[in-house]
Image (cartoon, rainbow, N blue to C red; front, side, top):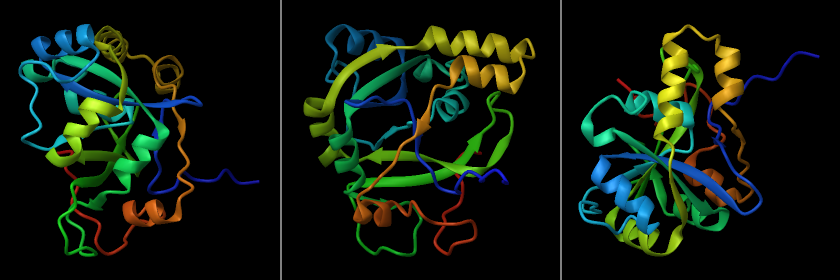
Length: 209
């Protein structure tokens, strides 16, 4: 039997029965205080601009340069939230650059090309990025976060292994512990266009340049 290809839009995440993990990158001051207080409501954190969360570890590594991109992304935080809250955020979203919606939603969803384990290449399927606007971000920061962990050292160990030439399979086995995250709610699937295929109208330009 031929191996089934990964769907064009698919949520892949680290999760258990109670929670799902998403990632963000911050400067050292915000990250250290957020971990200490187990809250993002710390000096320097702001919800005035849209805050983006990423379930994909590899995409977070790509976007932050394994925490080396710049000082404002020098610490990678793993943020746990319940499945219910994660899906409630998705239910309030619309697709960035989509031609299918004329209203401004408080949450924006983007599907960008997933990266190879080294982050140096694009894969033919996409990874979800979720932008949380102020009206939702305040509630997210105050009520929806279960725990915050600094995983920067893991990111930097992965970078060392990438630079040492570790094979993609070994990188994936060591660092990418994600499974397919199923969304059963049909309305949420429709909103985030989970079942879209390559070439669908309304697919916005990639933001991973």
